[in-house]
Image (cartoon, rainbow, N blue to C red; front, side):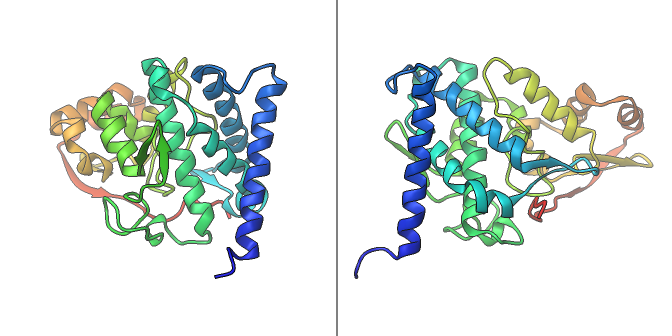
Length: 273
């Protein structure tokens, strides 16, 4: 072997330059790199929000899509640098809400990075890194290290967010790069706005047909509610949860709902192309 190929060296150099730019930005704001975890996380939130607003577009059908081609071409290095810096944060020193926001941002940003690394793809399930919760996919591969702990996307979602925080609204926050998934938001999650963002994500998804659709009293719901039924409770608990966020049109239909007749999910990539 004569070392990594030139393309790999170029990618590594680009990521390192972007990482230096990220650190320089923190320093320019008058903050030492040894700043508290909250300061570093705040700086990362601004970077992630900037990337989301640049590459995530709200479509007329109510689904947020990502301009993956442009993102990969223009800002892969910046995203990779952001993720490198995020892994330096001592998340255990953050407050509870800030920790939740940190893990959601880390999960979503890494999911986007994985898609960019393998783009173009038809679906995230075509990215086979050793299998995942639903079949092939990138979810079980150890891709990140935080405070010395190697983590997969599954670890973040199921062992940390679902198990440690126990908030069913996490399912409206993490995004799996699919059309059937709740929207990738246009800004980073923050501890200060966590509840409002989780509630907004829940309302947005529940009132969209891919979340809950009622026709003649028959309910077709996202498979998310079937896959994670233990988080949402039984049929009556689930319908009650929907009612908490239902807007008038859906609320009226739910009053006539008799049963859940089917669960559906679209694994197509949420690509704006």
